[in-house]
Amino acid sequence: MLTIAKKFAADMIAHSQQEDPNECCGILAGKDDTVAKLYRITNTVASPVRYLMDPQEQLQAMLDADNNGWDVMAFYHSHTHSPAYPSPTDVRMAQQSGWLGDDVYYILVSLQDKANPHIRAFRIMENGEIVEQAFSDDE
Image (cartoon, rainbow, N blue to C red; front, side):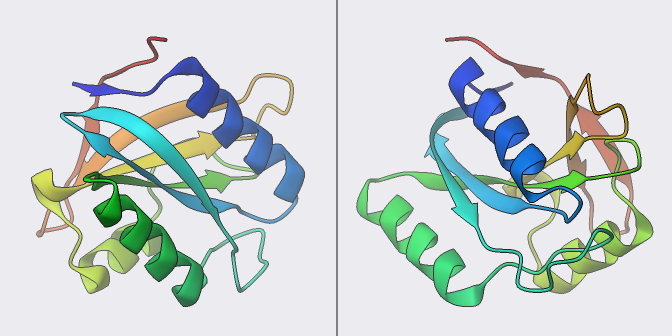
């Protein structure tokens, strides 16, 4: 089970709120299903309905993770006006990227209820199936 420390969950929510009304995006890296680092990545399309990670920042995050012996564990982004559930666009982008199945989690932060942000985790399979994943928010 994926373990996301409360500080990283809080940072994803803060990032989402700071970028609202646009979607935010980022990467979680770590080892043995435990997040060790959160990388905020610029959403180059600055859109309330989609995101595209800045390729240079994404590369730098992946290189830093590799240099620290961490794996890229998850990609996160926010939904500013909809539930924390992958949209058809999210599924298509995951399929195009090749980051599928057990290789990576997709974490969504919903700001649909601004006073109560909601985080959920998923795997997106090659066939487009969306499988919700439980996660722990331990210290």
